[in-house]
Length: 338
Image (tube, rainbow, N blue to C red; front, side, top):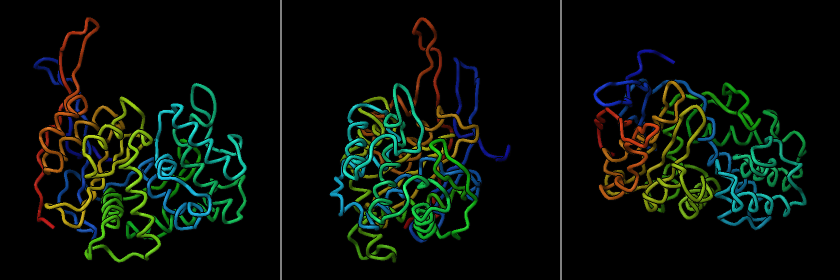
């Protein structure tokens, strides 16, 4: 990280600026062209949970999804950082039961209030286990970086992001691997993910199996936003709902965020957006992401207003008085339209 990164978001109390959140934003097209950036587009950051939609692709490309009749609702759970509500825990339990496993097979660790099913990554892990079962691979070490499941995830991500497969690797909060990548590569991966979801002749050249898998992942996230985060109060879910099929989005720990804008009039081949708040504060994510999408015209005025609590969070004191706000302070300039 660098102290030279620009301020993206300010926190005010009256006329006083109390805090500033520095970071970087990158917009990329499916060919890897950086259309706009604020801060360093080559900033290296860990992907954390932003990679989940990509980690879910091998569930489909391996044949596991078809073999075990995985529903789109279950596939959305595999892409999720969920709230651990009954709709999530019951869905994940059902996925495991279909391959003759239970909660004890998960290697993600427990989240409150009870067990591993409540871990916000349990759907991702269930998808990995279903893939391992289908391919007759070992189950106990499915989270090992050397396991074929994890190597296939790396191969898939590297293909989408135009990176070498020898990625710097660390252990994520759920014990699965996470990777250090340039922010522009994360934006590219999401641009290609949504580009593949279109039926246009302008799709990037990927193998047919991966293209079909990408399309299904995108559709599942749009169709079941409550599975991605929760039924209320989760930014991923509310952004998916407000955008009405225009995009997919995924938060990651330490304030990294990725968005894929589906092909539209302004971006006919789709667009990838990646953002990192340097200090890891989630407080800066909502204002920065919504402001970016509003400036791009991806979100219209009504949709932006629907996300007002994330776009311009208010600061209240202990008496409930409005004493300040959190606000993005940058202007984006596209270098060239697609």
